[in-house]
Image (tube, rainbow, N blue to C red; front, side):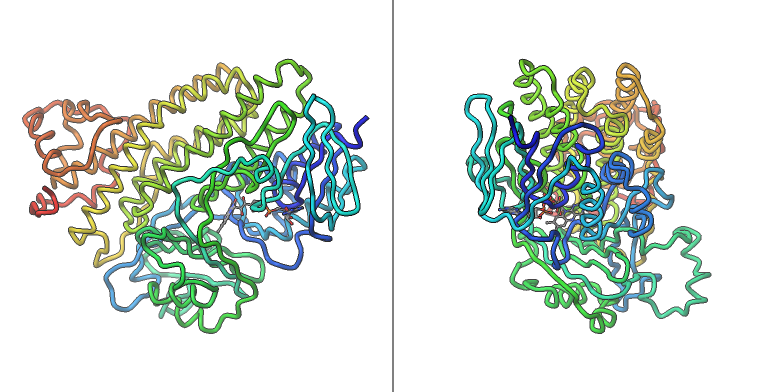
Length: 578
Ligand SMILES: Cc1cc2nc3c(=O)[nH]c(=O)nc-3n(C[C@H](O)[C@H](O)[C@H](O)COP(=O)(O)OP(=O)(O)OC[C@H]3O[C@@H](n4cnc5c(N)ncnc54)[C@H](O)[C@@H]3O)c2cc1C
């Protein structure tokens, strides 16, 4: 007889949330081991910003709503900022922004990871089925060969269990012992620091408190505290996060190796100095701040060959795969992986476990890989408000339908639904890849034309993009049966395809300097979602073939949502175009 049903190696975010899920939804007896005596220890942990799926998982699935609302800030979406050509820099006068103005109906949070993990440990310990052993050094996992029990040994102890789940983070105990490491093609790094007090971008201004209250920009931006957002200060291939925690602020630069030399930002102070040169409005504030902790990864992204097996082992969190912090997918993937792992552990039909684990592995891989083109192909789009808006609103609309909808409807482990789901999701692989390359090249063209850093700031409301606004309504589609969810997803697929078509058409309209492009039915119908490359000379020819038509395309969206970026006249053809 096994000592435990499940042994989890690592009491970080992935391990403790998995244990919590097993406490809440199963009768399993769980042992969690960690090398630290008393995790999370004194060092502050990175990974604070939650988006809808992770927010739902922590607050609803894991029933931590009261803790989250009491000890962490609720988050006000993602806000992206871009510089203008102004020599001086004032937050209100010289910085462009792109954001969602309304609060999300699925609560999201800026979590102090250490506090959250202390709370997870506390609530887990309330359950007699949960055991924690800290200070477990030199863990060795002996996987059972023949359907027997796994044995886990550590200095001073040993235990058996039916299942072993590795959640040891970057050291990756199982990944290493089973040689499952796999590289990916994202070469990005990050340096971060926590400073005392609140860094509030709204205050980086020459305006007085009263003047800020009545600044006419608020007619566009509104009154909700901007500091509650994950504020991104963007540049080509890089972004700087400002995340508020109670009593301190998390600040971090994430960069593509192609645009930032890691040695120039090799510690917290150097990173803040580097950012203050790019964003002078921060300079005075950063000089006065005390750094309370800091960290750095020169190259943080990796894949894994496998993360679940019918031999009753699995891997969750950074012990398996990690892509990139942009859009905060870390907690989302932990939520999805843990949900599938719990379902596999609870599987009564041992004969079907093989097929189930194979299917779950496919889901885990697809959810991870769907992010990769966003990071490996078109990171440069962070350097322009319009291009990033096209990229992010498309990705976010997909996310609301293909990540949030199945998760809030508890469908991720439902094989009947997930088979159809994967088929529909696969449709977007080539469409998304084509779009990411198209936008990458569009950005390079805009940059060469000197169009990415405007003289005057622009302020974009992402919900002006109708397909995104409609996708947000999926937050209210709860309790769907499988056929109902499939119908909703079918509508979503059509919406996203139309969105991709609009993005291509919009870029054509900009390049051709002609708004009529956005209405021309035969031209718009001729656009190939999987095969349209950014080549201005060819784009002119493509349109010329249909230019005489007066047939109007029947959009379900507002094709002029970003018309302020369409020039009145056709830009001069430069040698770069050819
Ligand atoms: C720069 C950056 C920014 C990020 N920002 C976000 C964000 O905004 N939002 C988000 O959701 N995610 C973010 N992430 C991702 C997030 O940090 C991870 O998803 C998360 O920390 C992974 O948690 P984990 O439990 O897998 O690992 P950890 O939290 O590292 O936990 C691993 C645990 O295992 C223990 N351990 C390690 N080795 C051993 C061993 N040999 N024996 C026993 N115990 C061991 C450790 O002590 C630790 O307690 C970010 C990541 C990076 C790199």
